[in-house]
Amino acid sequence: MEYTKVFDYRCPTDASKAKHSVTFTKGSCSRYPEDIMTSFVCSRNSACSKCAENYRD
Image 1 (cartoon, helix red, strand yellow):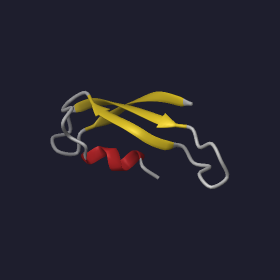
Image 2: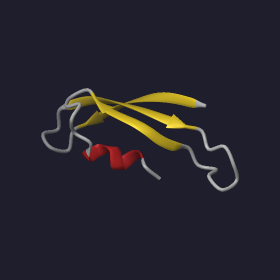
Image 3: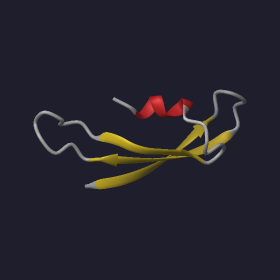
């Protein structure tokens, strides 16, 4: 099962406001109990993925 969360964020490069849309897949077994990030999109710069590391476990 996938779900998407939207986070308000300040860009570390220039402190501008941005929204991060992060899609997660629910952990489905005891070997992977944590939710796994499957997609990351920044509203300020869709090509940037620096902040994606903040949402990885």
